[in-house]
Length: 271
Image (cartoon, rainbow, N blue to C red; front, side, top):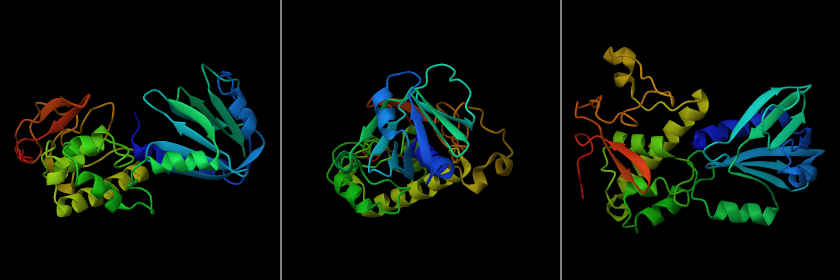
């Protein structure tokens, strides 16, 4: 599933292509025909993101809400648009650009009150200027749940996924199984600031890179990482390989239905 930086990049791309323009909306697949009809011929006024949710606002206060889930993706092109290839839930056309939405988990039109309810159930997003980390800290500081689970809970922090949670915990030397209520205020502040830094870099470059300059392939004289997810990381999907910092084999375990990666040497147990 795409992590939050990808959705913010999609918001930027939609704003660049369609912002302030009248947009044609159709549903070649037919499953979103009524929603597309409501948006067709409207002006896209603002493209926004909150966590893993893309929110495209139109001039009549209707909002297109898209959550890509595991299989969803946007495919961009130039108009005149060619006939859709495969299953396309929604096609947007305007300003010489085409955007096809395939296989999303959620694609719906929301009224203003529904958008507010969606935002209210999401935690603060490290990539948003209006984010308040204290809102998340209040949840974390009362929880018996491991911090690694809390960082994946979108009602606590919106946007981070499996990669960012593993990497930020490693970079801060925090045991992923440490209960939230035992995380100190200083540790939380460092985690949040690091998420802001890493995710903003993800928006900038379009991939997740988390290693510090001294641990890049060039600095260490090692081969670049080869992985479908791309990017240079410390522990994510490196189970059994030596830690880039201390040499301890990276550990992995399933936690709350997701694979968790960490270094027992750099993140000693605090439970």
